[in-house]
Image (cartoon, rainbow, N blue to C red; front, side, top):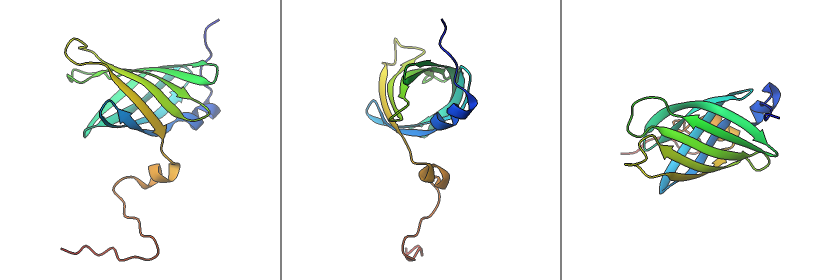
Length: 136
């Protein structure tokens, strides 16, 4: 029997922003679409944003993703990872299309809180009425 797809109501629990360790750096991965067995989004690493799309399947309490970065960028590849549905932790790897020149990279990401996602990285936050005046 083929693994079932992800329903629309459930998909919302797993879409979002995940960030953490990517080889020796940091990566942000955004899953912004899940429907049935289809998933898509984008990743940001070292300032480079790359779209991806592919397939998601369920295996017990885990979702398994295979997501391809389309295009001709030398750093395009495929993500193979598992999302633990209880902890919202991602573990897996990224394999370059040209794996003879670029080695496989491990990834370990966790879900960012929704408030942080909504706020974005370019907004000011003031706690306790502090002074936000820029002093040079």
